[in-house]
Length: 344
Ligand SMILES: [Zn+2]
Ligand SMILES: [Zn+2]
Image 1: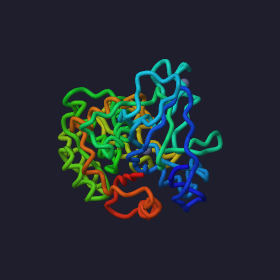
Image 2: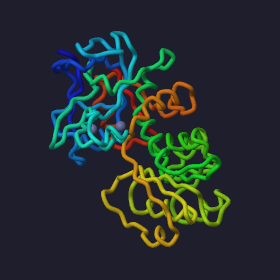
Image 3: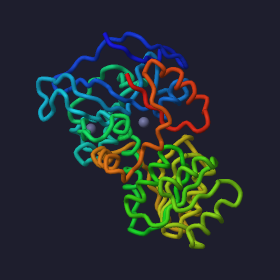
Image 4: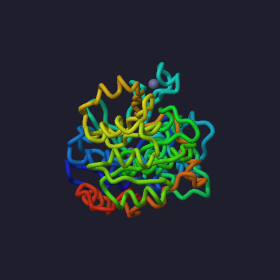
Protein backbone atom coordinates (compact mmCIF):
# COMPACT_ATOMS: atom_id res chain seq x y z
CA UNK A 1 0.00 0.00 0.00
CA UNK A 2 1.00 3.61 -0.43
CA UNK A 3 -0.19 7.03 0.65
CA UNK A 4 -2.36 8.89 -1.84
CA UNK A 5 -4.73 11.82 -2.10
CA UNK A 6 -7.95 10.46 -3.56
CA UNK A 7 -10.97 12.38 -4.76
CA UNK A 8 -13.54 10.10 -3.13
CA UNK A 9 -16.62 12.06 -4.17
CA UNK A 10 -17.09 15.40 -5.89
CA UNK A 11 -15.58 18.12 -3.72
CA UNK A 12 -14.19 15.67 -1.16
CA UNK A 13 -10.63 14.43 -0.78
CA UNK A 14 -9.22 11.72 1.42
CA UNK A 15 -5.56 11.29 2.22
CA UNK A 16 -4.89 7.68 3.08
CA UNK A 17 -3.90 4.24 1.86
CA UNK A 18 -4.25 3.17 -1.75
CA UNK A 19 -3.02 0.18 -3.72
CA UNK A 20 0.43 0.65 -5.22
CA UNK A 21 0.41 0.75 -9.02
CA UNK A 22 1.61 -2.35 -10.87
CA UNK A 23 4.57 -2.08 -13.21
CA UNK A 24 3.94 -3.33 -16.74
CA UNK A 25 6.66 -4.79 -18.95
CA UNK A 26 7.28 -1.48 -20.69
CA UNK A 27 6.63 0.69 -17.65
CA UNK A 28 8.61 2.21 -14.83
CA UNK A 29 7.47 2.92 -11.31
CA UNK A 30 8.28 6.41 -10.08
CA UNK A 31 8.50 7.72 -6.53
CA UNK A 32 6.70 11.04 -6.95
CA UNK A 33 8.70 13.96 -5.58
CA UNK A 34 6.50 16.85 -6.72
CA UNK A 35 3.16 17.19 -8.48
CA UNK A 36 1.44 20.43 -9.45
CA UNK A 37 -2.29 21.09 -9.09
CA UNK A 38 -3.62 21.92 -12.55
CA UNK A 39 -6.56 24.20 -13.32
CA UNK A 40 -8.22 21.20 -14.96
CA UNK A 41 -8.00 19.30 -11.63
CA UNK A 42 -9.66 22.22 -9.85
CA UNK A 43 -12.42 22.38 -12.49
CA UNK A 44 -12.73 18.62 -12.36
CA UNK A 45 -13.09 18.18 -8.60
CA UNK A 46 -16.68 19.46 -8.51
CA UNK A 47 -17.83 17.36 -11.45
CA UNK A 48 -18.26 20.30 -13.82
CA UNK A 49 -15.90 18.91 -16.45
CA UNK A 50 -16.98 15.26 -16.27
CA UNK A 51 -13.27 14.31 -16.46
CA UNK A 52 -12.61 13.43 -12.81
CA UNK A 53 -15.27 10.87 -11.95
CA UNK A 54 -14.53 9.67 -8.37
CA UNK A 55 -12.84 7.77 -6.98
CA UNK A 56 -9.72 9.05 -8.72
CA UNK A 57 -6.17 9.96 -7.77
CA UNK A 58 -5.59 13.09 -9.86
CA UNK A 59 -2.25 14.68 -10.76
CA UNK A 60 -0.52 14.84 -14.15
CA UNK A 61 2.18 17.51 -13.67
CA UNK A 62 4.78 15.52 -11.85
CA UNK A 63 8.44 14.66 -11.46
CA UNK A 64 10.20 12.01 -9.43
CA UNK A 65 12.70 9.21 -9.23
CA UNK A 66 12.52 5.79 -10.89
CA UNK A 67 12.31 3.02 -8.28
CA UNK A 68 11.40 0.00 -10.41
CA UNK A 69 11.83 -1.00 -14.03
CA UNK A 70 9.64 -3.29 -16.19
CA UNK A 71 11.29 -6.26 -17.91
CA UNK A 72 11.36 -4.70 -21.36
CA UNK A 73 12.39 -1.19 -20.39
CA UNK A 74 15.60 0.02 -22.00
CA UNK A 75 17.65 3.13 -21.42
CA UNK A 76 16.27 3.96 -17.98
CA UNK A 77 17.58 2.94 -14.59
CA UNK A 78 16.51 2.91 -10.98
CA UNK A 79 17.52 6.26 -9.50
CA UNK A 80 17.00 8.28 -12.71
CA UNK A 81 15.33 11.65 -12.19
CA UNK A 82 12.41 12.00 -14.59
CA UNK A 83 9.30 13.84 -15.58
CA UNK A 84 6.71 12.49 -18.00
CA UNK A 85 4.10 13.47 -20.52
CA UNK A 86 0.64 13.85 -19.02
CA UNK A 87 -0.73 12.07 -22.08
CA UNK A 88 -0.19 8.37 -22.60
CA UNK A 89 -0.36 7.95 -26.37
CA UNK A 90 -0.20 4.70 -28.35
CA UNK A 91 2.84 5.52 -30.48
CA UNK A 92 1.55 3.48 -33.41
CA UNK A 93 -1.43 5.24 -35.00
CA UNK A 94 -1.25 7.70 -37.86
CA UNK A 95 -1.38 10.73 -35.52
CA UNK A 96 1.40 9.36 -33.33
CA UNK A 97 3.58 8.45 -36.31
CA UNK A 98 3.24 11.97 -37.70
CA UNK A 99 4.28 13.44 -34.35
CA UNK A 100 0.81 14.64 -33.38
CA UNK A 101 0.72 12.51 -30.25
CA UNK A 102 -1.74 14.96 -28.65
CA UNK A 103 -4.29 13.87 -31.26
CA UNK A 104 -3.87 10.11 -30.75
CA UNK A 105 -7.36 8.57 -30.67
CA UNK A 106 -6.22 6.04 -28.06
CA UNK A 107 -4.59 8.59 -25.76
CA UNK A 108 -5.50 8.82 -22.13
CA UNK A 109 -4.39 11.33 -19.58
CA UNK A 110 -2.87 10.53 -16.19
CA UNK A 111 -5.10 11.41 -13.26
CA UNK A 112 -8.23 11.54 -15.39
CA UNK A 113 -11.34 9.43 -15.09
CA UNK A 114 -14.09 9.93 -17.64
CA UNK A 115 -16.66 7.76 -19.38
CA UNK A 116 -13.98 6.00 -21.45
CA UNK A 117 -11.28 5.23 -18.89
CA UNK A 118 -9.88 5.82 -15.41
CA UNK A 119 -6.15 6.27 -15.02
CA UNK A 120 -4.76 7.18 -11.60
CA UNK A 121 -2.26 10.02 -11.44
CA UNK A 122 0.57 11.31 -9.33
CA UNK A 123 -0.95 12.73 -6.13
CA UNK A 124 0.47 9.61 -4.53
CA UNK A 125 3.75 8.12 -3.35
CA UNK A 126 4.09 6.14 -6.57
CA UNK A 127 2.88 6.22 -10.13
CA UNK A 128 3.64 3.86 -13.02
CA UNK A 129 4.02 5.18 -16.55
CA UNK A 130 5.15 3.70 -19.88
CA UNK A 131 8.79 4.32 -20.75
CA UNK A 132 7.98 6.12 -24.01
CA UNK A 133 6.54 9.13 -22.16
CA UNK A 134 9.57 9.66 -19.88
CA UNK A 135 11.94 12.65 -20.01
CA UNK A 136 15.18 13.00 -18.08
CA UNK A 137 15.48 15.78 -15.51
CA UNK A 138 18.99 17.22 -15.00
CA UNK A 139 20.45 17.03 -11.48
CA UNK A 140 20.55 20.82 -11.30
CA UNK A 141 16.79 21.16 -11.69
CA UNK A 142 14.70 20.82 -8.50
CA UNK A 143 11.72 18.44 -8.78
CA UNK A 144 9.32 21.26 -7.90
CA UNK A 145 10.42 23.13 -11.03
CA UNK A 146 10.57 20.00 -13.19
CA UNK A 147 6.88 19.48 -12.38
CA UNK A 148 6.23 22.59 -14.52
CA UNK A 149 7.31 20.73 -17.67
CA UNK A 150 3.67 20.00 -18.50
CA UNK A 151 2.28 23.57 -18.43
CA UNK A 152 5.48 24.86 -20.07
CA UNK A 153 5.09 22.31 -22.87
CA UNK A 154 1.53 23.56 -23.42
CA UNK A 155 2.82 27.12 -23.81
CA UNK A 156 5.61 26.01 -26.17
CA UNK A 157 3.16 24.02 -28.26
CA UNK A 158 0.72 26.94 -28.48
CA UNK A 159 3.46 29.26 -29.71
CA UNK A 160 4.72 26.64 -32.17
CA UNK A 161 1.29 26.55 -33.79
CA UNK A 162 1.37 30.18 -35.01
CA UNK A 163 3.69 31.50 -37.70
CA UNK A 164 6.01 33.77 -35.69
CA UNK A 165 8.95 35.55 -37.24
CA UNK A 166 11.78 37.09 -35.24
CA UNK A 167 10.72 40.54 -34.11
CA UNK A 168 6.98 39.98 -34.64
CA UNK A 169 4.67 41.72 -32.21
CA UNK A 170 2.39 39.54 -30.12
CA UNK A 171 -0.55 40.00 -27.75
CA UNK A 172 -1.33 37.49 -25.02
CA UNK A 173 -4.94 37.62 -23.85
CA UNK A 174 -5.13 36.12 -20.36
CA UNK A 175 -2.22 36.29 -17.92
CA UNK A 176 -3.00 33.26 -15.78
CA UNK A 177 -0.42 30.54 -15.34
CA UNK A 178 -0.45 29.36 -18.97
CA UNK A 179 -0.66 32.93 -20.28
CA UNK A 180 2.41 33.94 -18.28
CA UNK A 181 4.26 30.94 -19.69
CA UNK A 182 3.09 31.88 -23.20
CA UNK A 183 4.51 35.39 -22.71
CA UNK A 184 7.88 33.83 -21.94
CA UNK A 185 7.63 31.22 -24.70
CA UNK A 186 6.95 33.98 -27.23
CA UNK A 187 10.01 35.90 -26.08
CA UNK A 188 12.12 32.75 -26.18
CA UNK A 189 10.88 32.12 -29.73
CA UNK A 190 12.07 35.54 -30.86
CA UNK A 191 8.97 37.71 -30.60
CA UNK A 192 9.61 41.44 -30.51
CA UNK A 193 7.10 43.46 -28.54
CA UNK A 194 4.83 41.34 -26.32
CA UNK A 195 1.69 42.85 -24.77
CA UNK A 196 -0.14 41.01 -21.98
CA UNK A 197 -3.85 41.61 -21.33
CA UNK A 198 -5.84 40.59 -18.25
CA UNK A 199 -8.48 41.88 -15.82
CA UNK A 200 -6.19 41.32 -12.85
CA UNK A 201 -3.53 43.98 -12.32
CA UNK A 202 -1.41 41.75 -10.08
CA UNK A 203 -1.13 39.24 -12.86
CA UNK A 204 -0.15 42.01 -15.25
CA UNK A 205 2.58 43.07 -12.84
CA UNK A 206 3.84 39.51 -12.95
CA UNK A 207 3.69 39.58 -16.76
CA UNK A 208 5.97 42.62 -16.80
CA UNK A 209 8.35 40.91 -14.38
CA UNK A 210 8.47 37.87 -16.65
CA UNK A 211 9.28 39.77 -19.82
CA UNK A 212 6.14 41.38 -21.25
CA UNK A 213 6.97 44.79 -22.76
CA UNK A 214 3.58 46.33 -22.05
CA UNK A 215 0.36 45.42 -20.31
CA UNK A 216 -3.27 46.42 -20.84
CA UNK A 217 -6.13 45.99 -18.38
CA UNK A 218 -8.97 44.37 -20.30
CA UNK A 219 -12.33 46.12 -20.50
CA UNK A 220 -13.48 49.33 -22.16
CA UNK A 221 -10.89 50.84 -24.45
CA UNK A 222 -8.59 47.84 -24.26
CA UNK A 223 -8.44 47.38 -28.03
CA UNK A 224 -7.31 50.96 -28.57
CA UNK A 225 -4.68 50.63 -25.83
CA UNK A 226 -3.37 47.39 -27.34
CA UNK A 227 -2.99 49.06 -30.75
CA UNK A 228 -1.16 51.96 -29.11
CA UNK A 229 1.13 49.61 -27.20
CA UNK A 230 1.89 47.65 -30.37
CA UNK A 231 2.56 50.91 -32.21
CA UNK A 232 0.50 49.85 -35.22
CA UNK A 233 -3.03 51.09 -35.99
CA UNK A 234 -3.78 47.83 -37.74
CA UNK A 235 -2.76 45.62 -34.83
CA UNK A 236 -0.22 42.99 -33.82
CA UNK A 237 1.21 40.19 -35.94
CA UNK A 238 0.01 37.49 -33.58
CA UNK A 239 -2.48 37.12 -30.73
CA UNK A 240 -2.55 34.21 -28.32
CA UNK A 241 -5.92 33.65 -26.67
CA UNK A 242 -5.45 31.86 -23.34
CA UNK A 243 -8.90 32.27 -21.80
CA UNK A 244 -11.57 30.95 -24.12
CA UNK A 245 -14.76 32.94 -23.90
CA UNK A 246 -16.58 35.37 -26.17
CA UNK A 247 -15.12 38.76 -25.17
CA UNK A 248 -11.54 37.51 -25.14
CA UNK A 249 -11.84 35.66 -28.46
CA UNK A 250 -13.30 38.82 -29.97
CA UNK A 251 -10.48 40.91 -28.55
CA UNK A 252 -7.88 38.45 -29.88
CA UNK A 253 -9.36 38.54 -33.38
CA UNK A 254 -9.73 42.30 -33.38
CA UNK A 255 -6.25 43.11 -32.11
CA UNK A 256 -4.26 41.47 -34.93
CA UNK A 257 -3.35 43.15 -38.20
CA UNK A 258 -4.74 42.14 -41.60
CA UNK A 259 -3.23 38.77 -42.49
CA UNK A 260 -2.27 38.16 -38.87
CA UNK A 261 -2.67 35.00 -36.79
CA UNK A 262 -4.62 34.01 -33.70
CA UNK A 263 -3.59 31.04 -31.57
CA UNK A 264 -6.40 29.56 -29.49
CA UNK A 265 -5.20 27.85 -26.32
CA UNK A 266 -8.02 28.60 -23.85
CA UNK A 267 -11.38 26.89 -23.96
CA UNK A 268 -13.26 27.96 -20.86
CA UNK A 269 -16.48 27.85 -22.86
CA UNK A 270 -17.27 25.14 -25.38
CA UNK A 271 -18.86 27.68 -27.72
CA UNK A 272 -18.32 31.40 -28.24
CA UNK A 273 -19.60 34.12 -30.53
CA UNK A 274 -17.00 34.23 -33.23
CA UNK A 275 -16.30 37.43 -35.23
CA UNK A 276 -16.45 35.64 -38.55
CA UNK A 277 -16.52 38.70 -40.75
CA UNK A 278 -13.37 40.16 -39.23
CA UNK A 279 -11.57 36.86 -39.83
CA UNK A 280 -12.78 36.58 -43.42
CA UNK A 281 -12.37 40.15 -44.60
CA UNK A 282 -9.03 40.67 -42.84
CA UNK A 283 -7.89 37.22 -43.93
CA UNK A 284 -6.73 36.05 -40.52
CA UNK A 285 -5.45 32.59 -39.68
CA UNK A 286 -6.82 30.88 -36.57
CA UNK A 287 -4.93 27.98 -34.99
CA UNK A 288 -6.25 25.65 -32.30
CA UNK A 289 -3.72 24.24 -29.88
CA UNK A 290 -4.33 21.19 -27.70
CA UNK A 291 -2.04 20.10 -24.87
CA UNK A 292 1.44 19.49 -26.31
CA UNK A 293 3.02 17.25 -28.90
CA UNK A 294 6.36 16.19 -27.50
CA UNK A 295 7.66 19.59 -26.40
CA UNK A 296 8.62 18.13 -23.00
CA UNK A 297 12.32 17.91 -23.75
CA UNK A 298 12.37 21.56 -24.80
CA UNK A 299 10.26 22.47 -21.77
CA UNK A 300 12.68 20.83 -19.32
CA UNK A 301 15.57 22.55 -21.09
CA UNK A 302 13.88 25.97 -21.01
CA UNK A 303 13.11 25.69 -17.30
CA UNK A 304 16.60 24.40 -16.50
CA UNK A 305 18.41 27.16 -18.43
CA UNK A 306 16.08 29.88 -17.11
CA UNK A 307 14.78 31.02 -20.50
CA UNK A 308 11.36 30.24 -19.03
CA UNK A 309 11.13 31.12 -15.35
CA UNK A 310 8.69 29.14 -13.26
CA UNK A 311 9.76 29.94 -9.72
CA UNK A 312 7.82 33.22 -9.53
CA UNK A 313 4.69 31.25 -10.47
CA UNK A 314 5.03 28.80 -7.60
CA UNK A 315 2.61 30.04 -4.95
CA UNK A 316 3.13 27.23 -2.47
CA UNK A 317 4.89 23.94 -1.96
CA UNK A 318 2.95 21.77 0.50
CA UNK A 319 2.79 18.24 1.82
CA UNK A 320 0.47 15.93 -0.05
CA UNK A 321 -1.64 15.34 3.07
CA UNK A 322 -2.58 19.05 3.01
CA UNK A 323 -3.69 18.74 -0.60
CA UNK A 324 -7.42 18.83 0.12
CA UNK A 325 -7.15 22.26 1.75
CA UNK A 326 -5.13 23.63 -1.16
CA UNK A 327 -7.69 22.31 -3.62
CA UNK A 328 -10.42 24.10 -1.66
CA UNK A 329 -8.48 27.36 -1.68
CA UNK A 330 -7.88 27.11 -5.43
CA UNK A 331 -11.51 26.16 -6.02
CA UNK A 332 -12.57 29.28 -4.06
CA UNK A 333 -10.38 31.28 -6.49
CA UNK A 334 -8.24 32.73 -3.71
CA UNK A 335 -6.58 35.81 -5.11
CA UNK A 336 -2.89 35.61 -5.94
CA UNK A 337 -2.73 31.81 -6.00
CA UNK A 338 -1.00 30.47 -9.09
CA UNK A 339 0.66 27.05 -9.02
CA UNK A 340 0.51 24.90 -5.91
CA UNK A 341 2.96 21.98 -5.82
CA UNK A 342 2.24 18.99 -3.59
CA UNK A 343 4.98 16.69 -2.28
CA UNK A 344 4.21 13.15 -1.14
ZN1 LIG B 1 -2.17 20.38 -16.38
ZN1 LIG C 1 -1.61 6.94 -31.26
